Amino acid sequence: MLLLFRGVERQAELHVASDAAEQHRPEPEYDYYPSQWVEPYLGRRRQNGFALYEVLGIDRRDLQRREQQMLRNYSFFDAPVGLLVTLDRRLNTGSYMDLGMFIQNILVAARGQGLHSCAQAAFAPFHAAVRRHLPLCEDDLLVCGIALGYEDTQAPENRLLTERQPVEEFASFHGFSEVAEGAC
Ligand SMILES: Cc1cc2nc3c(=O)[nH]c(=O)nc-3n(C[C@H](O)[C@H](O)[C@H](O)COP(=O)(O)O)c2cc1C
Image (tube, rainbow, N blue to C red; front, top):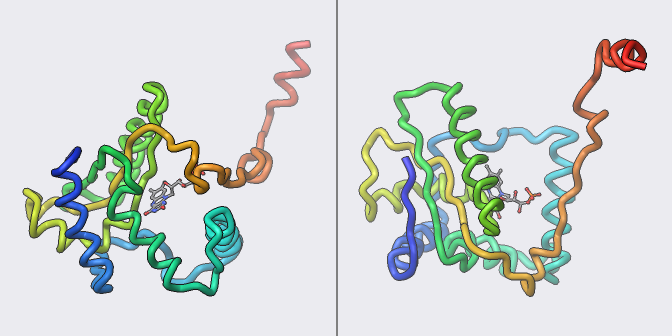
């Protein structure tokens, strides 16, 4: 299920989750992250986090400014449209894959329309606050939010380009050289 918010509706909705986040009452219904971080994911996560704070000019020991930045999630980073994505909790793990593809389709389609987006798992732990103000059924598990709008080219965080692993690091090719040789 998708809930879309715009304008005043978006503001009212998001303050709810923001209040909950400020009061530190996360109640995750599913584990987005591992309970124990291991390499290489830990290093990548740190690298991306540090790079973000660097472009934003936030000292990584400045917990207050880090928290303020985190809380911007709940105003959809000032994007004009916010989406909330839910999954029927009666489904199983495979449906997280299906939903991931559904979400990806939205993000890619947005680019096709000249829009930009930011997927936001940050909403998930505050589903209870969202639920109090939105028509979510008991079976709706809040999976993530999506900020949607046109890129603010002046925003420093939009200068950050996260690294990509080279293809050889996550894919191995078997039998392709023979095909290439045969084709010549
Ligand atoms: C499923 C998912 C959840 C995410 N949750 C958040 C989030 O809550 N807050 C956030 O700032 N970025 C979040 N991100 C990261 C951004 O959406 C985005 O991927 C990141 O800014 C880097 O951009 P890139 O994917 O083009 O490298 C999430 C990404 C994904 C795929």
